[in-house]
Length: 148
Image 1 (cartoon, one colour):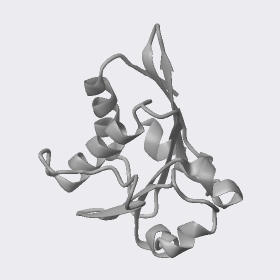
Image 2 (cartoon, rainbow, N blue to C red):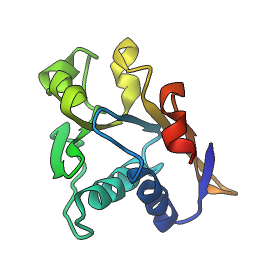
Image 3 (spheres, rainbow, N blue to C red):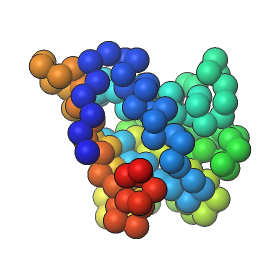
């Protein structure tokens, strides 16, 4: 599925639309260049899922991980830009995250072969004509929940 977002508010609205479909155990992999909108999307998603539109949601670029309490379970927001090897994700609590929460990963390509195959994948690209283009790929096992 392709979503064109011309303004930051469009990217936030795309996150809001997706948030209502997420459940504990879901993993979102957000890939794209710097400045393509990954953190804007993640921030809006976290705010709507926690029910706090004014929540301060810092980018986990330096801390690598931020967690948030939400009615659906713990939200785990990973930013893997600075990791050196895929195995470092285990030091960040990866195994706990994928068993009890909803996981958002920026820079999933840093995970290499450890990236989950059954995750929702969103690729962020910038385009002079469309602003930002979000390409959403839903795994087969989740298509019923995300297609309605």
